[in-house]
Amino acid sequence: MDILENAIQTTIVKQEKKELHHAFHVGLAGTFDYISHLGMMIMSISRYNPDMDFVFHLFVNRLPEDENKRLDMAAAQTGNTIKIHVVNDEAFSSIIFGQYNASFFYRFIMPDIVSSETDRLLYMDGDMMCRGSLRELMELDLGDSLAGVVSDRDEKRQMDQMQVQGFFNSGLMLIHVSQWVKKNMLAVILQFSQDNLKYVGSNGRHSQWKHALYNDQNILNKVLDGKVIWLPKKYNYIYKLNRSALFRKKAENEDYRKQIILHFAGSVKPWHDWAANWPVVKEYRKIWLDSPWKDVPPSAPKSRKDCHQAAREYRVTGQYGKAFHWYLEYYKRKL
Image 1 (tube, rainbow, N blue to C red):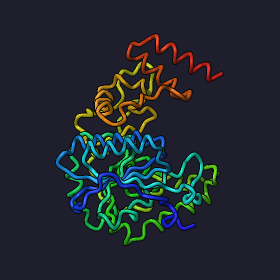
Image 2 (image 1 turned 45 degrees about the vertical axis):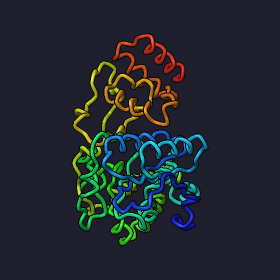
Image 3 (image 1 turned 90 degrees about the vertical axis):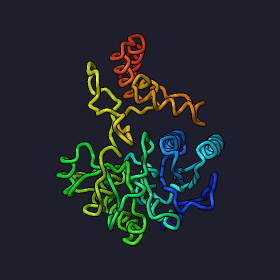
Image 4 (image 1 turned 45 degrees about the horizontal axis):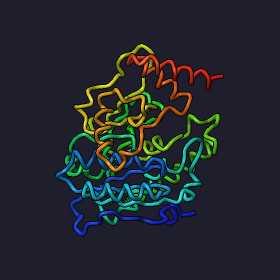
């Protein structure tokens, strides 16, 4: 099955404008139950960049009617164009393995899908928050590079493991669309992905896994090695909301107010109800409450790991009743 020919089932456009040659195109992706978080990306980017026009490309596997209505409202509220590309997940069946679902690989097809509209696409993960101007990224000279990227937190270890010149976090990629298409990067990535499956198997395990590219981020780092330019960390700052130790009062984060794009890459997200006391989450929630998703409540702990994280958070913040409750839930699920 040809992935590019079969990936997009339909495209729905909200707030289409005739003159969009000057707009900044942003790519977002996730399963249908992630649309509210992608919506928050639209709202935070629009709020902090009122002097810019955007075209938001949402790649999702389904568009529920309630989310369709909220996206109508988001387009009207922000004045920006939103394009929803409904994806056929079966098109990615040849490269999916382990715990990954097709949405992890949507970004691979984005440049080819938007190539007739723009020469640059800012891909962003859905667990991010914008709190500053993106104009510098829109105007940045990408030269002959394939993308602008930000180094990952544990870059040195991953560079050694992957044998690459640098290791980036693929949660944000400023993609040079024309160069990407010219180099036929989709075909290159798909070949690497299929070779990857030969090593790790469909369940993601193999005795030779250390030789495999293993996941979408590793694949991108390998195929783009030496073909990227490096952006300041403020454009993809990994901000941890999870407590790694029971009595640790603060996570190892720099001041979030100095960053342009925050990436909540840990297990705790700003839409988790037990993260409500973090100052940055309070800022995130203000945007949430001024958005079409204001009626969507924060998520309560679901997994055993969630219960443990919630208990730690409530313990550290002095909410001992809630801490006791979630520790009890954690141990119940451990039995």
